[in-house]
Length: 102
Image (tube, rainbow, N blue to C red; front, side, top):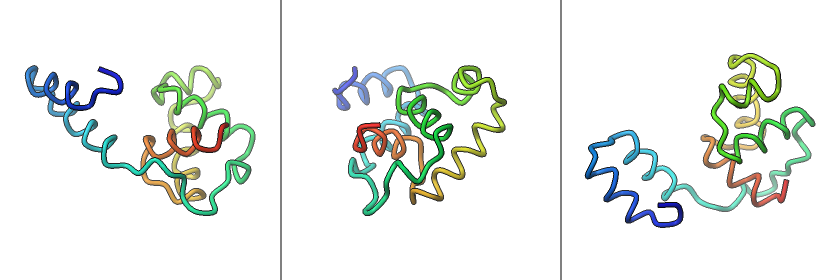
């Protein structure tokens, strides 16, 4: 279903997966461009590492385990990154990382 939002939406509706429907709506509606003027270099090396893990689809728990930190630390890093980069979601963060080639 990757790259086929209409098929994914039909599937989520068929199985009654409300969270999937909402997530898909978020993915489809988020612009692909990075915020104007935002650069990956404003993040620390550790924050960039986390950003790459999130862009790769890792959950907070998996990212925390990969980085040997707590989930709370990952949440704090994400909040800080969102503020520094003027982002509001992990989808935007993933698209930003991809756009920056990080």
